[in-house]
Amino acid sequence: MNNSIIEESKQSLIKEERLILPIRKKIWLGFGEIKMTDTYAQKTIALIGRVKLSMKCIYHIENMWKENDYIKLSFLCDSINKYIDGIIHADELKKVSIRYRNVIQNLSSRDCSEEYITIAMACYYTANVALYDEMILYNTDDEDMDEELDVYTWDTAYLISLLYYTEERKNDLKSYWEWYILTAEQLFYEQQRT
Image 1 (cartoon, helix red, strand yellow):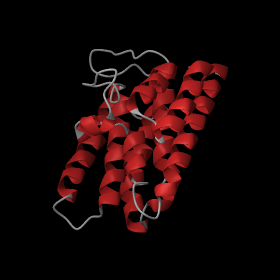
Image 2 (image 1 turned 135 degrees about the horizontal axis):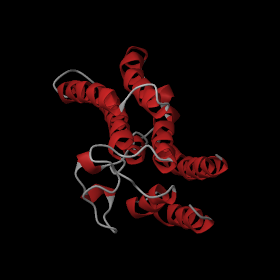
Image 3 (image 1 turned 90 degrees about the horizontal axis):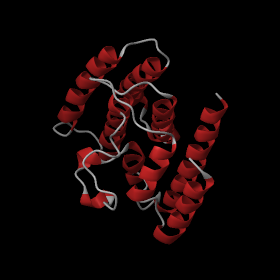
């Protein structure tokens, strides 16, 4: 990731008042190229940077997690971290992720808030980033915008931003995207030092 991507991101945020998908793709690829094996993404420094960025998005709104939901949400997040740290294999993360996906599919039939479902989906999408490293690029063209895409194509950062589209949080949306740009930049430079 170079300074021009960061500067373009900041200018886009000023113009759009949000960080649009084409710009987030540039940030995503700024960490490095995507490398796949036959089954999963290679655990490259670039992949780890993207997963860390997605995880930071989830933890950024941790104050929105309800106490009883914390255990459910943190279980998948802990599994993602264990995978990135080499404690569990990709197959184990995939099993946890599939179980978690099944729980999410049942949430809409239960009395769960949209906020909780959104956070749960963001956790699930982050597991997919760890396993397949292409969620933000999957089935999208260079100029596609988030609102034109299917919910299953959205990335973690965009899902988390949806939590700011409420009357009491709408003023924090731009701050969230400023935080995202700064965090991506910091992670990239940390990655370069290793």
